[in-house]
Image 1: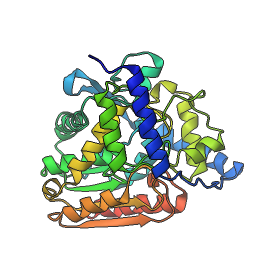
Image 2: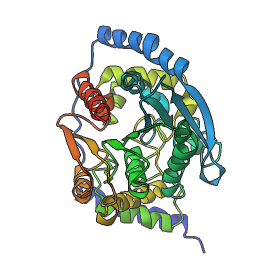
Image 3: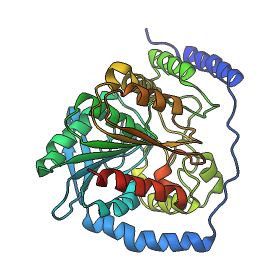
Length: 375
């Protein structure tokens, strides 16, 4: 017998009340915005240099992921390359969001490969093709993300017979990368992990730690609500608005107004690319939440992290509302066989340091170039 909707609603109401009574709401600051002149200068750079490079130099295609899902990817081949760099994006993202980073990292002389996870970007969506359902972040098993990335490495990246292989991965992609280098220690020579999802946080409806969030998501999945939105997440009346300072502040992803605005302008022109939401403020299902929590527990376990045998550089954001620093530090401490594990902390950065204000982002880019360039 299926649990009734009334039981589901009652359970969610009770558990949400417990969360609200036991956790604090985030104190959202008013963020300083770049001037219109600064935004226009950046927009001109993005439209005349970054996007033309991305669209003109990229070789775009699909490969078949686990279960027959079609996965979108792009590759940027460097002449006489020194190796390969794989980029794994985060939740609710598309490979276009990494256009500027790819443009900057071309200086490494590496051929760059980036895929869009199942349910994201141009890759096949998991749920039905109705507009709302196809945007939900849903995953039957987090292992499918890892399996897709391994297929990508074996069938697209490694056919280039590169001498070296590196990986740059952000957030959810950081967890996928962590599991890859644990399970396949000979595939990569070094890794950069940008705010890897090794401990989940959520700010909806309040700040929810994993000790409450995981049993809640597991309970709701058990009640047959795996495809329902997690907690109070719901589709907004307006999907995306690149002019909204309120949305900019509420997403808690970056403090760079120019980058947030110009990227969202691109997505406004391509709304079918939206997965979950333009930011991290809505869109994940209870099933995804459950699987993601379990993936964080798995990746940071001592017996798993000890399998890592390559150097790692990790970026942490001091004001990260999306993933927890404690989980990252536990992962680092457990990676006892990594020959080097360096951490760069940006005290006043939000989650996406690679999309942050120039003085932060410049360090992300230069540190990544120096790190990979040292091999």
